[in-house]
Image (cartoon, rainbow, N blue to C red; front, side):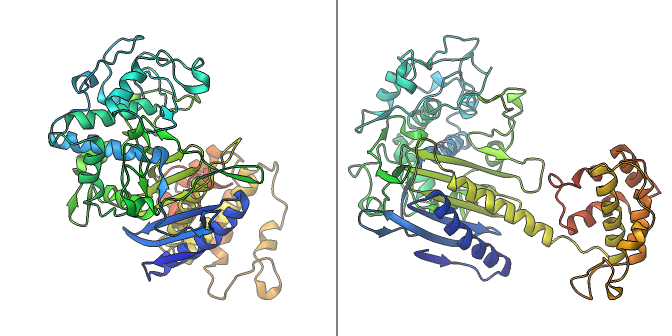
Length: 510
């Protein structure tokens, strides 16, 4: 680690920082990452910024918390927020046909109906996949570039003769589309009453008021379009192939509202904090609470649609991707990649007030490494376990009863050992440790009640070895612990409702 800034003295937040320090160093060795930087929030406030490795290999310039990344598709979230700002203020509606706000007409020839703003926000316009119309030099105006793209029958992917521009009728399939999000950027540019360019609108209404001092959304990530203090902090991106790190050739997105942000992690973290706080941060109202909820809720209109991998798109919000909606550790976020030099990830867990933004200056080939996503997964898992550690206390008798019942269920049902348990099994495992038996407590104050453990174990050991039988048991008077208390004890013991050998042994809470 090169440099860090710690903004907390809260013990559990400090533990998270400590865990990340070690994990990031090991992860960079695993993926041979040149450099990365990170910003983390917990309980609604930023707690840590840090830089690891090199921002530029040739000059040995170290990565710092203020090093600026190329966002890739992480930038799409700003386009979504800009649309919602205009929705709050009235110039547009989600169900408006996009042609109401464009200087040219867009028509899906596979048809059925007009494309709406909402269709573009959830990737169901019928457009095929594309590569953000990447180019070697800054291009024409956004309107000119998009008009040229829509005039082509083919996407530039794979040489321009493999992926059609239009692949499905409107609203019938999900396909991730850079062109679709860029079109939303043009709508922002055309519909805002201040007559600002897209870049100016994002700067004035999102970045500046949120205090994003090292961020911009230029029409091209080029020194001619970027403030000098930001350009001086930009990192060099690398495509590693084997043991060789090759600096990326400058690539410009003609569809730049699909991914043209330059920023440091701590700045993007402020956007996540605002959204977790119902659209407000440090006294600035970015969005109405209703608009935030709309962005970060599964869209019922997607119905049974599937993505390009055949998976349901129920985790698609308005541009934002939603994860684990049915669990307390639900999160929202977006990843990004700028060819072929940077990978980014920003994710937030609103129930914990926690978020992480990480940027790595590597897009390895032939297949890209996933250090940014792996770091977000690490934070999410750590938060889940912290919630288990902070679970409400359960009295020793109840905890022992549930412990005994779960252990018997593990043998009888979870792994399904047939036949009756051996005579004396319960007695053998409940001998007190002072008598050199099997019960080994980590301290004399361990939550242990032999009698209640034995009753829970014996009750489940006598059941037929089926899930149905044990579920009936927990819901009946035969159990000495009601179902809600059993779930609380399960969580206190370190159990999670989506993983592990025992999680199916308890029926869902009523």
